[in-house]
Image (cartoon, rainbow, N blue to C red; front, top):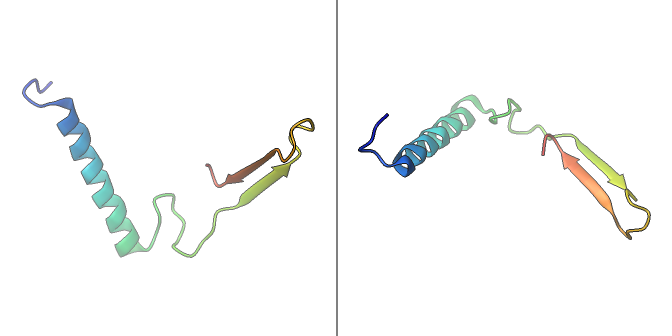
Length: 65
């Protein structure tokens, strides 16, 4: 443990390092963090009328989101 370091500083340092790594991968290897190249699209899944009693109910999923 590092009692003299605030947990916010550790989290912020991790976030900065993560951002730098992802940016480097995108700019140098032309890949996104999920492994796709920069021109590849994620699959999309669409479902409509999921709940018959609700007008316009639908679900859209793109990739793992």
